Each structure stands twice: as C-alpha cells, then as structure tokens.
Image 1 (tube, rainbow, N blue to C red):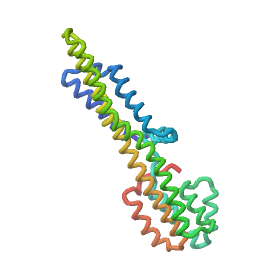
Image 2 (spheres, one colour):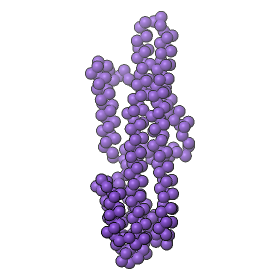
Image 3 (cartoon, helix red, strand yellow):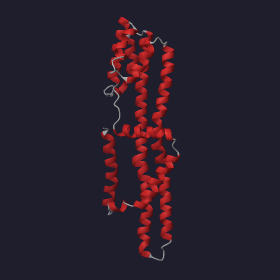
Image 4 (cartoon, rainbow, N blue to C red):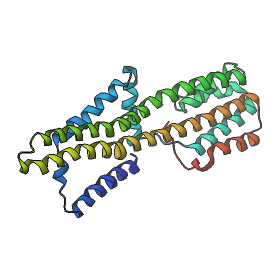
Length: 256
C-alpha cells in the first residue's frame, strides 16, 4: 500500500474541509447531488468519449498502481545480474538456464536472458527489448492519460455546472430567499470541478508518470546488464555501468 497516496488525499481533503469549518462553513454545504451529477459524472462521460475501449483495462491497472505499486529493487536486481554475469563468465551462457527456468526470477530479466541464451546478438537483444519496453510504456501511459484527461476536463465542466446554477438563480429573482442558496449551489459545482481535478486526477497522473519512469529505468538497467553478459564484459566493469542506473533507488524492493 502506498501510504503517501492515502496520507496525501487525507491531508488535502482534511485541509480543505478544515479551512472551510474555520471560516464558519459546514461540510454539508459541499454535499450537492446536482453538482456531483453535472461535474463528476458529466466530466467522467466526457473522459470516456476521449478514451478508446482497449485502454479501459489499463485504467484498472493504474488504480492498483497508484494505491498498491510495485516496488523497484534496483540494488537487489543489480546484484542478481552481476551474480549471473559471474556464472556465465565461468560456465557459459547455457548455465543461466537454471535461473531462467526456475519460475522465480524477475520476469523482464528472464525475458532478456532467454534472448541471450538463444544466441541473439547484443544488437538483436537491444532492438527486440527496446521495442517491448516502448509498447509496455505506451500501455502504462494509457492509464495515466485517462486521469490526466479527466483532470483537464473536470474544471471546465465545473464552470458549466456553475453557469447552469446561475441560470436557475436568474429564474427565481422574484424570490429573494432562493437567490443566496442558488448561488451557493452554483459555486459548489465549480468547487467540485477544480477540487477533483487538482486533488485527485492530476496528482494521480503525476504519480503514475513517476512509476512509469522508474519502471523504464529499471528495465534499462536490466537490458544493459544482459547485453553486458552476452558481450562478455567483466563483472567489475558491468557493476560500474549498472550502478549509474541504480543511483538513489538502490534501497527499494521489487515484487517479482
């Protein structure tokens, strides 16, 4: 569970509602079914129009990744690659089949090693794997772009809700007691649009973007490691190259 996502949402909503209470307002003032239907459901519909059906599966994955992300163990994976490099240097590439067939190895590392064991050249491994990485990145970005699009549309639909509310107020100008509450409801729609976009949608898209960047960086490290193994680079030199990728991520973990 990503505790920062939970704490961040709690802090954001807590700060907004707490500030409202300090100003003399009441949380119930924000509970407007009409505004919710117009802004949240309306902007969701507009976002679905902008989404191709095949991307819906990636939307579900993006939700899981926001709250329960995979952890990237750069250091642990680097050490495993170096261990395999030493093994391949002593006994040849075929000795790596034990790791590949164990069923417990890192899936991406296994995929790259399989190409090396099958006799692919370093250039062929790099070309094949980079295409695979690019396709995976585009699939991951589909979920991110859904939240990014929703965050872009929600404020505009919020303005639409506010205008609709003010139109209703104009129809009851002869009833002064309804003008104040009507204006309040109109502005709640704008609060929904701006608040939902900037507290939920856009932060989620930013976090997903960082997860994608970390995933691509880890895969780049694995690719360089396997190309190094296939090319026969000395483990010491390979360690120096891989440490550049690990950087400050060395303390994390990655679920296999």
